[in-house]
Image (tube, rainbow, N blue to C red; front, side, top):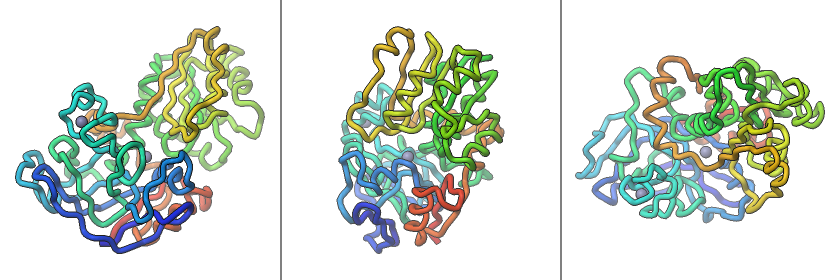
Length: 351
Ligand SMILES: [Zn+2]
Ligand SMILES: [Zn+2]
């Protein structure tokens, strides 16, 4: 089959790799209908984070498709069913899965499709994929729901919602979202469900801030000075009640702590590539702030968020700017990485 293989820093290629097969009786093989390039694929692409996959590894952890083959012990889905899967691979049975922390699954050694967190599992930027523990891992997609609406439940929509939920937003709050990339934009959409009075989006890319404004945010442009100062000015000197950090670097993390009001909450879902950060602990301490951070256990969110997408309360497909054939993935990575051609979210379609 055709797949997107990692070949080195800044180098992903279209290659022919062996077709995936059923290995365990609980596996399914999906024929992928849509996949996407994620911001965390770019960490791999740039060799950031010190944990590269081996050359030749199939990339991608956002995918969905149709069950082509199911192992004899699979009960939940049948060949022909359209399904989603989360970005991380989990068993559903170990202590961590039972604690609803499937990203910590010890059975799979914290595997992620197409990437490094723990173990590496062949990814979804391909024509087919093997999904293990299918009764636990797959979520059927309702008839009539488009791939564009369903796909992001497996990663970035769930992550954005998790970020907003961890913020503990209360009706009437002022909320600031750092980063107007795909996750930030979906955190912003999710934040609106909790009834904030005002939402601010912090970024330096004009076309991304314009889309954030469409989702009801007031833009805070990084080129116009320190965002913490701008946010304090915009909130009568006090700072936002909740800051959602969706970038994953030391500077926005620090600025989030500086911006939030006393007693407020900083919720962070940016994937940090640095092993440690300079943390303004003294300021955080004297502000009595709450800090939540972590990798989203997307498996827990796929089913609960599905009706919110079906009902139009969440509109994840609005962030899609490009849909390309799988064979053009190297170009998709490049424009997403360089923010060319007003790219926000790139989908890939195996033909
Ligand atoms: Zn991702
Ligand atoms: Zn497990």
